[in-house]
Length: 347
Image (tube, rainbow, N blue to C red; front, side):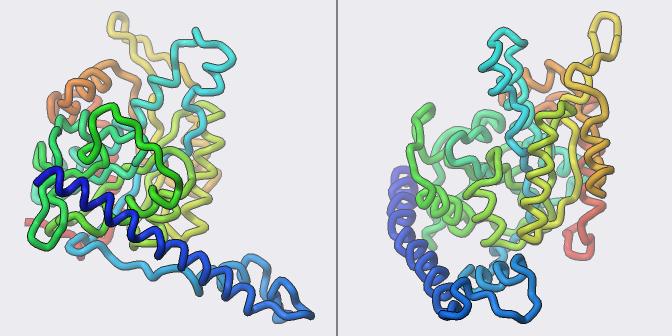
């Protein structure tokens, strides 16, 4: 049955690529029809700005947003990709290997956020979707293995641990196997992960976005209603540049930005309790103020966060009374406060 799920997803992805091509053709055709000899770009003299005209033309060819069956709220967790240390590593490989540290700690956040929400309100029904097709990480951090089974309706059943149903491309490919797909395949896979999963009734679906502002982010933003986006960044200037880009991208596609999270905000020495700001101080706080956003909270740089996630026992579960868990739960509670409670299931 597990192998059937993998074949089913692959077949569905291939068959839907034609639909994507047809959509692109529709967009280009309608833009072309809107043009005239006097107005080759299709921009009439009605006083509308170029940006308004572009939005109007694109909206004609874009699919309507349809909610995921049974899911009341969708929260996306994203990072701007920048500041992960790739450029720094290219210049000097010996600088603390900051790329590996930062990438991993950014990936950890959605897992502990989902678990923090569940810990804050145990009656909540929380799901977790790993939308990073090229580098799925949820299976390891949630200590899940195996492949999803299919329901009678040809939907994939999420794998569950710690009370959270999860779905990831990591369940559908061999561990360590690279996914060598072009953009259309990725977009189609993301749609299948959204639409052809038997989530059941969920109050909140947390989507772990891949880094950057590319096809996956745009596809999800255009396919489903999103209650809010959370931008995870670090205090350093390079990361903040792309955090700004992430905020602007979600604003352009009309997705509310709930706020920023400052990851790796500081390091506390376990021997002398000295607090060091390795990546700068209050960078995310300043950007949040500049962009009229809320800083939802700070997550410290701590080895326990990394070790517990490596072991498949996230710190919110394995160390529920730790200061790090307190930080995650405080952020989760703040996010819940910003959602319309009238539609959330509380017991």
